[in-house]
Image (cartoon, rainbow, N blue to C red; front, side, top):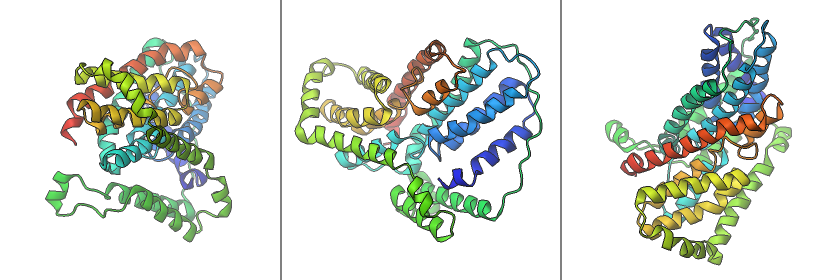
Length: 367
């Protein structure tokens, strides 16, 4: 909220636009990388809402027909915001939900940095693949961009103070629990404060310094918070009522004799498919307790299966209902449903397969 209020994200975006002097496709790549980075720290909805008007303004400045280039840029920004949200516990709802359910059902706690180790490789790989695939699917003759210099005024006092608080928050989150090899090297395992407690401390600091006030408190996305709470409650209800156990009983004949790789593929695509027809938050609330229980019943790490659902339920690029960035991109009128399906279905499959590959080959070494 503070980053958006003082337009620190917009300031950095304009700085990038003013400094990049390269071919059009590389300008798009730089904007995609920036979008994915800010999506790790603010919601992917907010980062898409910020970057799309900037991209549209760049296109309005062109003196030539941009053909597919506007479509490419709109899809690239929305998709990279979705991918960026997976890189931390802040960008979208499902990673934090996965951490919460895993902690409650298994006792295993995943820190902010540990989630980044799982999610950030997926973010980076997906951003690069999105860039390649979208440019391949929608050929364009645009090679260079011509645009006017956009003034980026110096940061005022409140913006500098806000930036300082933001950097302090990042430092606190990444030092909560130091990875073991680094901890052994420096002799310090981290301060031990939870991500939620750090967020509470930062919120108090923002009010103390006058960067936020009661009006900002009213503007908080309480609907999203209630949606997360409701989805977690739904998962608890499924667990308490025995519904998740009953579902596992129905699934066991199918997965009992299957290899661990097959189970990972099935769980990964289950998370993706449900998120195509329901919100990613609701999908995670329904599937997370089931996935963790599958792990306890099959001998596959329930932590890995929970992390997979935290990723794949926010990995839909095919339909507007899949994620908020998709809906925002579609609402611009620059992208047809057929365009989104054409690019998104391939990215969906690749995204799940990348997640499965990491879950099978790398993640067991991290737990």
